[in-house]
Length: 145
Image 1 (cartoon, rainbow, N blue to C red):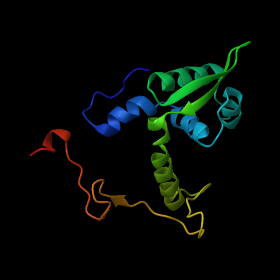
Image 2 (cartoon, rainbow, N blue to C red):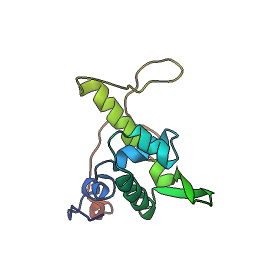
Image 3 (cartoon, rainbow, N blue to C red):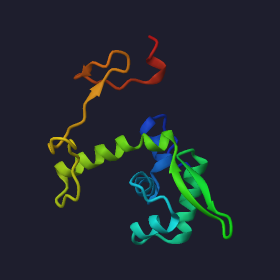
Image 4 (cartoon, one colour):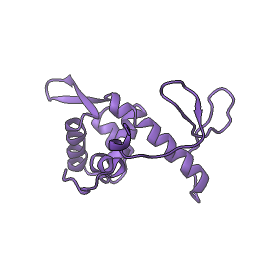
């Protein structure tokens, strides 16, 4: 895929990897357990076989998925998420929460599996695990100042 954004920004550079049409939806299908080409294609109404194949190859090149050969004749693969692919689950959860708050027609919501209560996103420091209430985005070159 061609990089569309030449901007020094994590969001822009992430969109260069996962921002093409269908890409996030393909990753989401694999995350939810649809690991075979035909399962993914069936779940994504409207995607062509060629485009799905191209996106899967691209996601492999970017290190988000790993194909596993399960049939040699003809060669057929299942797809598993790598660690970086699995960590997109947080992005999906954020989109589900945003959608449940703002979409006119809501299809999903994120809940606590034990209580059934809807959840919200919270941020904690990596070092101490304490809840952070005052976030600030800084440029990486400013980290050591």
